Length: 258
Ligand SMILES: NC(=O)c1ccc[n+]([C@@H]2O[C@H](COP(=O)([O-])OP(=O)(O)OC[C@H]3O[C@@H](n4cnc5c(N)ncnc54)[C@H](O)[C@@H]3O)[C@@H](O)[C@H]2O)c1
Figure 1: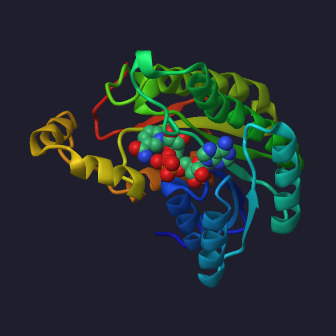
Figure 2 (figure 1 turned 60 degrees about the horizontal axis):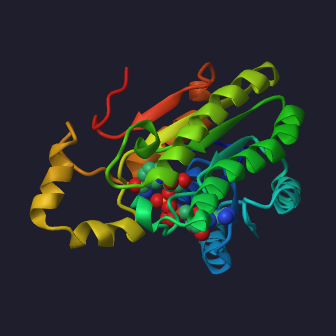
């Protein structure tokens, strides 16, 4: 891997202390970039920032709930000051956040939580970074949809499907609005990636259920986390300089939209 690929770029990662976010952060540092972690999990932020710094990276963190626009604005300003600029936003904070899948079990609060963190959080963070990107002469925003927002996945419920589909609309509309400032906005739509949190769930499934999941994937195997990280960093890097308003499906061929 080219260790200079992200040299000098300051990259904010929301949900950066989570399974995919922390793996992205390690790769950013390995490729020469600076990292700002925004997450609600204070102890995980501290552990990760220490790790990244010990690897020789420039890293900082802020405990922030992406649902709160004022806290997001403050955290982004502080991280921009300590890292020097904001060139990339990777908006990974989200998920179904422990809410139930089935309609009869979903409360009003569950629905609000999933919509607010995934959609409003992505909006709040995108809006907060755009002035810094304009000042820097451009930037790249990567939003997190999911195969569950691209199709009627049996794994996740209605709130998650709603939120992850809404993120695609947000991505396209925002890309149209900020293109003139050389700011690109693209979504990534991962299939199932076994972070530490999800690996336990997968391992508890019966062998036949596991085979059913794997048999639905033309590539015939579960992915490594790095196989989501590398496409995200492609969208972050100048290698994708003429790509905006798209969604990149990273699912081993499980879903092949027209
Ligand atoms: N892992 C997968 O298989 C998969 C598949 C498709 C999409 N995704 C999406 O990728 C993103 C990352 O997923 P992951 O598997 O790493 O999840 P994760 O649960 O490991 O990490 C999510 C992180 O977001 C943080 N977070 C939660 N609520 C927050 C809030 N209000 N404000 C700030 N931070 C908050 C959590 O503390 C956690 O560190 C999510 O948007 C998820 O929906 C993941």
